[in-house]
Image (cartoon, rainbow, N blue to C red; front, side, top):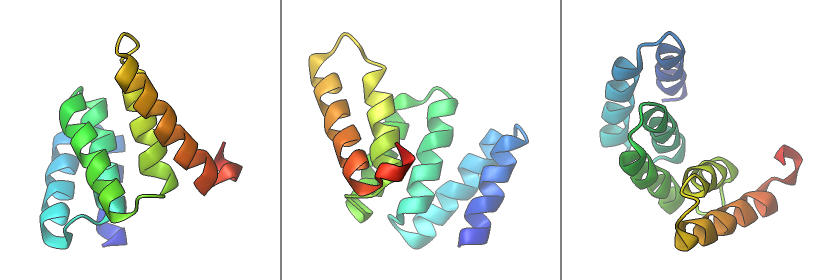
Length: 107
């Protein structure tokens, strides 16, 4: 699965985002809510401008690994972009706090 996830990420870097999304979607169906797959899928969805699906997949990644740095950090970034919604900003801070606690070397 790691090789397939990395393959999909490389496709995205080659501007083949739709292929990457399809591959990660298939991996998600096959492996369920595996954190790495859903986090990478959400990142690509966010880059494609699909914030709603990205948010759902970041949350799926957190269901698998609630204290994981990457989905907490990425969801915090996504939520912080909605600067007019105090609830989004509050949730953003919560996710950044978990990310800080989980892996302070990345901060």
